[in-house]
Length: 82
Image 1 (tube, rainbow, N blue to C red):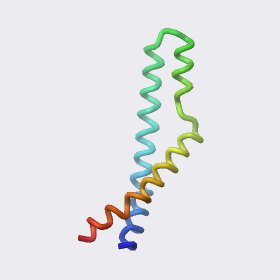
Image 2: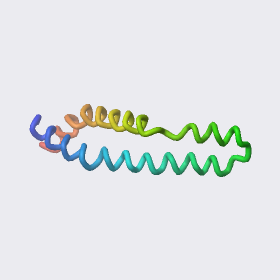
Image 3: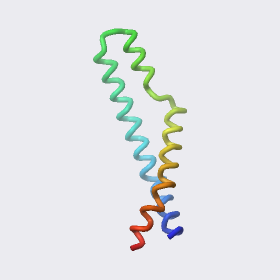
Image 4: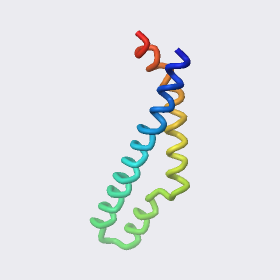
């Protein structure tokens, strides 16, 4: 079971975590920019722009996704081995 979980972890990390992160980055930034475009007030526009995540914050999101993957993969390994 552990061997399967380790294999899944490698595949999951390389493909899914990166894909999820890219998806989130693209869509979250797009969402915030649309909110900014629709807002008329300059101060509110600036506050909305401040909601965009920095590179460091996206790295924290990536680390969090990897932590979640480590917890979830052994659960899925049980079903794959059956």
